[in-house]
Length: 148
Image (cartoon, rainbow, N blue to C red; front, top):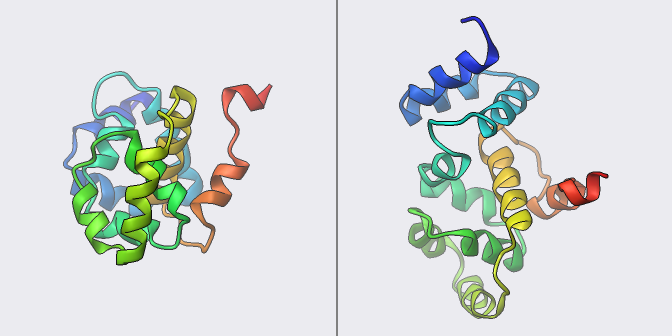
């Protein structure tokens, strides 16, 4: 392969299982770099499509300890293929709270949507194995508006 772009294109052409197998064997830094390149790559799966193809149990496990407002915002980004399964795996009181929150939250802005997708992607695909919560990652994230 002649470039990083070539690697991203090859990975994009693989099955989800093969992509996950390869990503699981990369260092955290290599994964993060590759995922950043993939976000900028035209064609192939978008970050949202990649996240939408994940196993519901994996997503539920990543969101279980998050505050209800974070989960509600993620679910409000779009209609996810795993949404019902993830919601069903959550405790009943949390499901009730999510129902209330989702109805009262404002529409997700483009900047917030991108931040949520990028952070969820980092959490689920870049091998985050620590106890850092999504909320903490969001606190540290820089949006184009805050990076200036």
